Image (cartoon, rainbow, N blue to C red):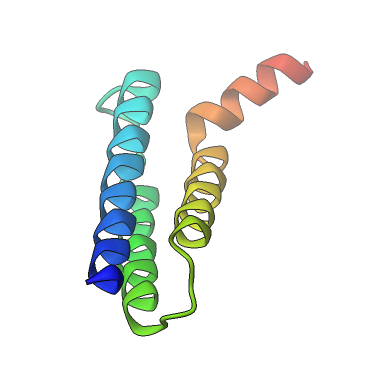
Length: 91
């Protein structure tokens, strides 16, 4: 039961972080420049992380959620709206 609860918590965190990423990118870039590739990579990475959590008993829930949060941040940094914002700040 503990293993299933931990996996469900990781899955919920993956869904929430992915939804937050999608909403933030849609608000920043609009429909025309939405980063579908990054969203797809985020979904695939989340599915892989949930499967790893389910397979390995010694993986903590907080580790999995933290790793996915950092992965989401990395994906968000390499989208066009964020890169354009960095360009305007630097120049």
